[in-house]
Length: 97
Image 1 (cartoon, helix red, strand yellow):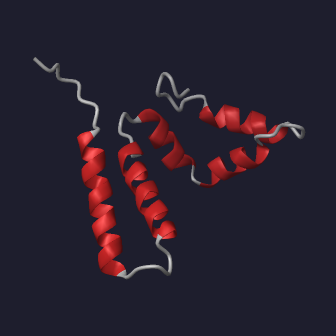
Image 2: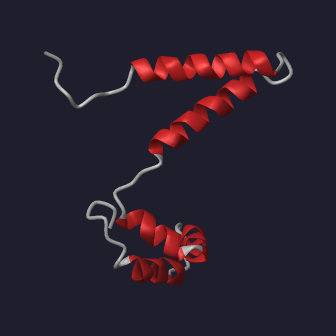
């Protein structure tokens, strides 16, 4: 389903996973049913929030590292430095001459 970006078979997969008592994905399938429309849209669109999630992970890591050690201005400075560092390591698709 994910490789072909199609959510057409998703309801049947969820029903099969929920019907199998010994299946380890039953709780996961139950969670998918709570927001089926959003999951189907996420499977069928080419858009990804991976870049945003990576930034959020960086910020949370910095926040945990500095908890109780520094004030907001230093945290802000470290977040901006990490963002600038990540920008330098971006993968580009244009060839370098």
